Image (tube, rainbow, N blue to C red; front, top):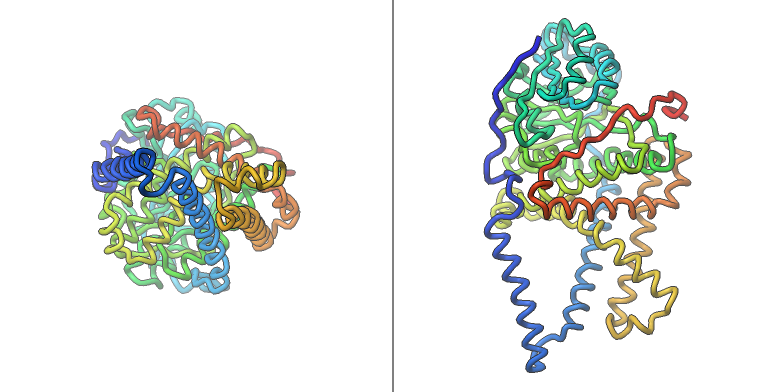
Length: 479
């Protein structure tokens, strides 16, 4: 059944990424820049105050401190994951919630140019272990996507499936489509799945049980994500290790410490009444999932992790990976800037600990991706040309502190990724982690592309589509 629906209400304007910077943020940036420029000018004219070299040294020291803080935070979260309080489900536990007591569930599946994967998607969703009469699966298809609509028309979409047409209006983003689906949803709970997802068939039952057992303030549970094609090539090995470390270690550590969890783009399950109360997703934010996780925390509600896995397809082509990663980084910047507009209020709503964790997770962590090439270049220059040319620029404490941050920090993060591989049983990928700095270099390329798009209003909310269905060889799915 096709249904043309009106655009759903979005997030409150104060949390909208429609504008990049608030007037207060613009004023602050101009003030700080002006004060530094004035101080440098005063020194050049009168000799009073810090010299330009002093400002450069202070800036480098700040970058090193930032670098170490981000790495220290990530290692602390991974260390804390060993005492994770994520919801686990033992044998027979799902039987404690019989079918008659299961809530109605809405599955939202945003689709755009996914004709190649919809047959397999429908097959997998049809295999979900949940009572048909309590299940609603909304396939959210863009109005201008005739190819995907045609592919769906050839399938038997009886029972729980419904096709919802998303109006062809700006912005053309996944969160806008999800808001359209949310307006149509009839369930008590809902979940987002992407076109290539392979969710645990019992995941809906597990999430429903988790909501039954957890306090009312828990309005979202996040399942773990992993890739089913880690062995396609070097890129998918690194991508799979990154996901394993994030979803099996880092987010478990954040769950353990009750920090604001930036949601993954899929397999996040919600209480629909709370989701509607939040205003749904921000259609202008290209990492709407991370933003929603922060807004949940700011409302005083919680997100918890559940041990249930959804498998996704790892990008195996470099161009496709760059497009996807630049969108993620662009969205992290958007989310960080949105929630930093009123920093005092953010601290008041979240507390110092949670607010600092958000800066380290979304903002500072992304900034380090931009400064990585600078740190690598300085370290390489030290070994190639010696320290003499650098000593006038940087005092020994800054110079050697930077080298330590670069070498020790990269070594620790390589080790963390190896731990993620071991945690997920990706043992052959452990060797590939010795070359992971090359993967981080690609992240830096994507980060600079993201900054370039943020600087262009026409590209600021542009959703770079990730092509799915690239890897169809079963030989690459397991090893």
